[in-house]
Length: 263
Ligand SMILES: O=C(O)CCC(=O)C(=O)O
Image (tube, rainbow, N blue to C red; front, side):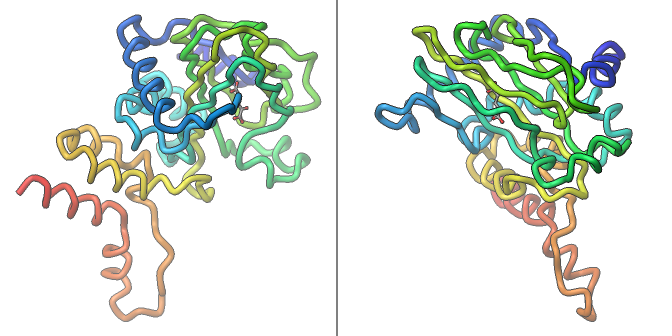
């Protein structure tokens, strides 16, 4: 784990090869394929898969990977982080390269502020569901670009089942897919909990609770990661302020859904 932290502090990224066992990888591929069957648009060569955790709870394994959480604890210096987004990115044969960019929320933070700050706002994880090769559109990064201009781009080729983890300030892209097979990736953005999440993860959590009551224990264990304990804006002039806050908490709604299911 310390190696990964050193890599995040140095070049800004780490690749952990074969983090998934062959059986886990097989499950991910089947689950990913099932979602693609439902959402793939005719003729499209680039498909993002939103709401993956709701679509199939198999992906919960990737969000809650213990190495990812240990690294995130160290990276942010606190457990006060949440998931901002969890989705898939599929490049079919013929897909164009993705433009160079930093990840959320750094689109909205001036570079001179984000590069100078010691407070980490965002950590990115990407799981290779297929081998990542130069031909099929492996993720590309500019090493060191989380702290400055960065070095020449390199391609993060790795076997299927590998985990790529990086500081979201790192400038990256995905190459075009020149192979004859799809290249699949599933991943999360974790953010310091004071940042507004990109996706409405608390509502995804409630949808998961409704759809998968028999996964209640797992859902409850990691509900914090999907924002169950985040404050929801409310009227602070209310005389029953504490109750108003409690009633609006996602955790309260979650407990209601799961206790109804258990009755
Ligand atoms: O799929 C990839 O390799 C990179 C995706 C990416 O950079 C993004 O979705 O922002």
